[in-house]
Image 1 (cartoon, chains in turn yellow, cyan):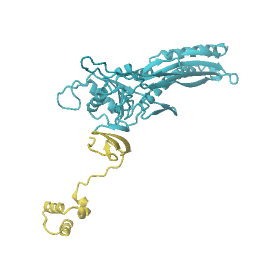
Image 2 (cartoon, chains in turn blue, red):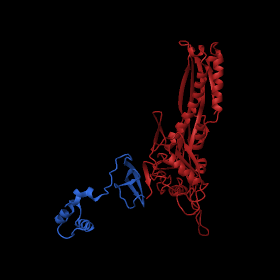
Image 3 (cartoon, chains in turn blue, brown):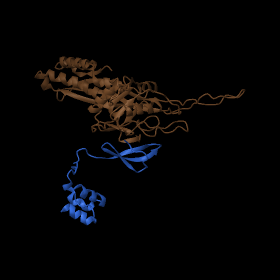
Image 4 (cartoon, helix red, strand yellow):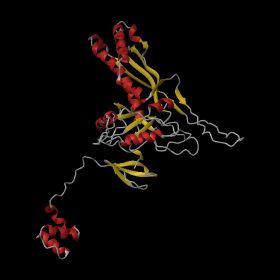
Length: 89
Length: 335
């Protein structure tokens, strides 16, 4: 699907290609291909196991950390650092 | 498009006389064989002959509609004027091959016959490749065998452009090149055909031509399969309901085997053509100015029999309205 409401200079993707809008005509655009996402580019493996993201606890929001604690039967109260310590412990 | 035989030095040479005759027959036979390249050119263009250095086609603008006037009023003055014109100039092409005296002495006639047949097929392939390159290229020029040729239409824009002009003032720019891909069903096909039906002429009047031909690259197997399904299915392809497929039987598919798009699956370009507009507007024309003209000569230095083939042809577009390009690298994007 081509996104609506783009402005001149903005880019969008259609399949493996990226296009740049050079003109807006009503709901449509005049655009040109500016790049290609190679279909053979390596795809990052999805992180399925929560253990794989152990190091990323710091980057998770507080609410998510609380949920993780609750899911694992741990105490979900306290500061962020305490939650991380419980999850890592 | 019969082959012409010009000077035949080989006929007057005792050593080459018989072989000259045999090879000439092979050339004639091959020329009259059914050939896919000939068929392709006929399918993509109006094929015509010419007796001049080039062919120019002019056009006229149209009158506006009749308007109601009050009793006793004068007629509303209107006029027509010169519209766009386009000159297509023929170019010359030449190629040769040699039958060696040694091969003749050793009775290698089969190889010479194969070369003669191949020579004619090379000519036909060249025409088709030129025709295909001319039609399928984006931009205002196209390249054939390292040379660049013009592919603008009467309005000075490339055949496929987002800003085709009208001749009369107030006619909005029109586009017949789209970046949108074919997709997985008939939606884009129908959408583009509808745009094509609403193309306006240089005076701003809707032309109403029906688009009925889908031209796809020879290396687009997924698209070929999909298009075959769409144009032959009674029920709407890609759905699990029983809606009628409104595109059944409306289209003719041309697989242009000289068009190698090298596109990723699902990202193939395609062209829609209105054969009605093509005929009436004389949109795309392929001119055979001089069909293949063959001559030969025995070379004194080597005693070889040298054949050459000379031809002149050209292709171009007087009007853009019969064609729409989809899946282009630059163009209008329908959101």
